[in-house]
Length: 343
Ligand code: KG4
Ligand code: ZN
Image 1: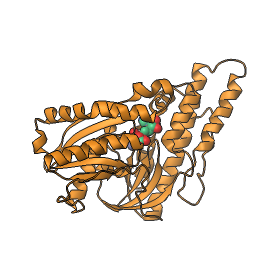
Image 2: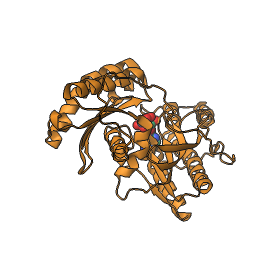
Image 3: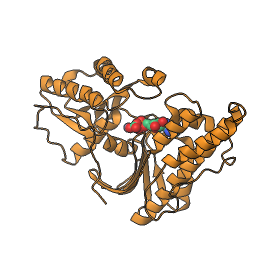
């Protein structure tokens, strides 16, 4: 079965072709980073308009790369939510139009389910069950994953998401949008022991997170240093490294607590912050020390992409969770859409 995956929930237009017998055949992505950079964040209307421009050429591009025709596609998988409604509408309307024209089914995929299952695209891939840490720009969640479609929320952030904390702190340090990658690159040259930032909720008995106080702590330190002069290069790098260390410490501690609570040994990490080198190294060493294993998606699939959407649909199809007889007669978006069943 050949599946076309379409992702357009935020600022990346992602398209991929996944063959359930042959693996990932082709993928392509257009990142809108340069478009939004002058505004310091994603401008929803600009995002939607750009998805309109990029989507069809990207579909043509993956078909050409995979040497396939439109008529070869058996199923279209598209991000239905959560995300920016205008941006989602571009993907779902193109998917529905194509599905109608080709007479093939279209399935709406949950963006976070795409992220969550993307580590299964790596080799070796984790077996079920596992604990999933989802760390993106909009979400920080720990889930117990029994099987595809069975997600139990163990804990989540009560305020900012981890990626959001990276982005806001990066902006305090004068780094360009998107802040996460820029901050983590700067942190590599800094001393993470110079500033001792709080580890919010580190010792709370639950699996909740809180990151908004951390950026305020960084701001307080920035102001102290800016009294006499602009922040020097070394101080900025040390602030970045110390902030990153605080976030990583909390994420690692909560992941270990989640593994203990669920009596599971496998941890699967996904979402944009999963690309963070320091987080990857710390989690790998901490979890292996406790006899467990950590799995990450291939680095380029940590952030938004079409491959994870096609792949999630393939896994659901293999388990009979997709009705292939249902042809598109309408399309919908779900800008807010909870994934997990409640605790
Ligand atoms: O999963 P994603 O691409 O989009 C959402 O669904 O949110 O995640 C984007 C987030 C942004 O906040 C970005 O700054 C962060 O992931 N990010 C990183 C790194 N790469 C991306 N944060 C820390 N370190 C990184 N290397
Ligand atoms: Zn995402």
